[in-house]
Image 1 (tube, rainbow, N blue to C red):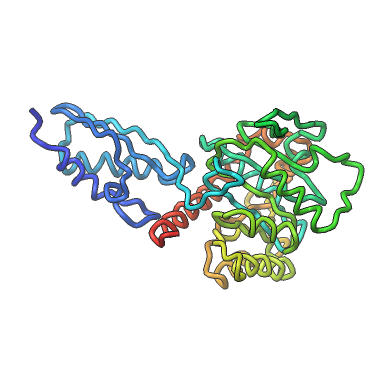
Image 2 (spheres, rainbow, N blue to C red):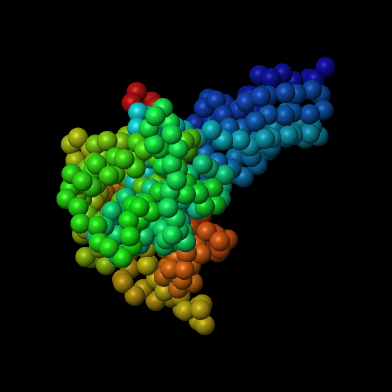
Amino acid sequence: MSEFSSADILKALSHVDDPDLKKDIVTLGMVKQLEFDENRIKFDVELTTPACPMKDMIENACRNAITHFISKDIEIVINMTAQTTSSTSSDLLPGVKNIIAVASGKGGVGKSSVSALLALSLANSGAKVGLLDGDMYGPSIPTMFGLTDYKPKSKDVDGKPIMIPAEVNGIKLFSIGFLADPRQAIVWRGPMLSKAFRQFLEDVAWGELDYLIIDLPPGTGDIQLTICQTLPLTGAVIVTTPQDVALADAQRAISMFGMQGIERPVLGVVENMSYFVPEDAPEKKYAIFGEGGGQKLAKANQVQLLGQIPINIGVGKLFDTGNIAIDAQKLTFFNDIAGNIVRQIAITNNQAKHNGQ
């Protein structure tokens, strides 16, 4: 017979806090499947996402709590699991837990690159991820993932043809570029764009996803409004470069998500092309487009600066040649940014839950 009870173990673990949700893991219901005897304590810790950047820290804190409050000699077996949280649901996408819009006020700031890097990083962490190319006029996802010749197949579901997305590195991908000749311009008015985008939601087999990332076109036009009014977005990631002209346009994108009738959270700002480090002189750093712009934008809007991305010629070549998924191990620099994004998602979902949304 052990000299401690399950209540003693849970009391010990109540000293371990989730640093983002600001509560202990017992109160949050994260401790599961507790088993113990006089020689061993075994339990699961259920995180809010497979991509949780605090995973190792929380596990170590649990071990320290058991060692300090229960026994220094007992065997501790902790299984770190995850159940991705969600604060929204959609009839269009019933199997999708979180919908993330990646937006910018202007083109050329690397929005599609950030969308692709986020999808790859989350998929590499074990999350189920989809990436929808919402840039109807300039789809770039097919090129980035080496899918310029991909033509989607379809399957019959209840008498209706449903398109099957491409899949690379476990990421489900869909783009207007799969359906259109890349040599021809797509010249559509707003209603046609909105109808086509809605089809990409309704008529594509997205299935069960932890995260659906939508790479929005630049600006604040028809597609953005369709998405914001059709889907319960979990939140938006705003991409900018440090220049003042980019910041002004990014501010407009942020303002759009705060408009009446839209009112979706902005998860934070990613500053792209922050600086350049020459390969032959890694000790040097050149802020070609200025400094501090992303931080300034984030502070002005009371959101997080999620991270800064340097100009990386090697990564640019991977995107251009369609080898970004093949050489995904070269993209670990983005993991901290992806971790910051999913942390903000977990915080947003927790706030929505307690606000009764």
